[in-house]
Length: 389
Image 1: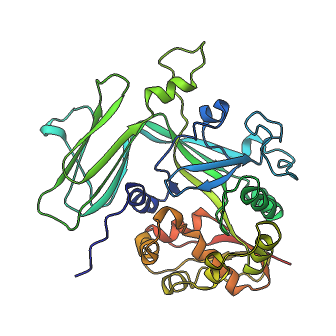
Image 2: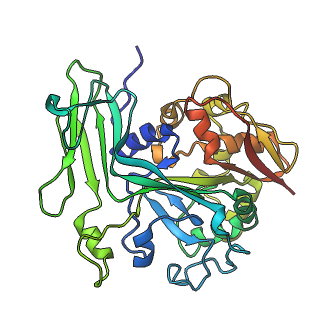
Image 3: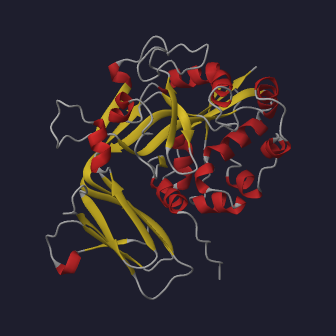
């Protein structure tokens, strides 16, 4: 009998179970940092944002490659040599669609939706499970989805500028980002309101866990969770957050579609030689605990699961993911006993690509590659990029 998973933070449980839904990286904290300009917070994460996914499940915004350096969202905080993508994107380069309708949800496979109290028409959602661990995302007002269509230009821009991004992030901004940590946003799912819940217990039990998500009559709250057992639930955004974004001329019931549930990104990895040069010249001496030995020491799971991720013989080539069954995210993340949110599935793919192509100066992949491996999708040809010296 397999050992039960150790009890972890709710943000780790949430990431592990919702990442396999094929929407990208789920954010446990969907709102933007309250210290960012109000103009940014009213919109939330956007196409072209450069930043990091934090250990707590938020997106740490640094700058946007589509905005000029003097834009009010940047407030002058961009790399010294920064210049935005030129020429600008065209409107038809970005697609926006309604992704989920009202009263939608995503949940772990073992979570079942129930009718509350046997009623055919009841307000809210009720879930039950007997599993040991899982997560639920409710989207009561629906959500919108945005996707970049002209991805090639973003890949080229990243390849040409990513080294300066690390100088900036780890120098003036002091983020201590590791190789591959910086993400370039090419897609998102946003909502006006949400509910998130996780549950965890030492083992499966005969008794079920029940979680009710429903409208709240409490002042300052729109929705609430009611549940029993080892569960945690939260809803948002709060009335305080909405009020902080509302202009004086706007009505009190104004809402914003700025809560980012998922982000999809372009992901990269630099060869250990290039990374060592960056750290030695700008970030100070290489620390032993953060040396490039970490890059070389792939786990058996990484090298095996993605051994067929692809071999590129030209600058831009295709790679076919594994034809075997889906890879469980917890098999990769939990094996190292690290925070799940600090593990990005693209890292394993990019490591393998660089090992198979030692003369490449950078490996670049999109989230669509690891999402196709982690979900039960029919394998298809997917594009990866390797730029050579």
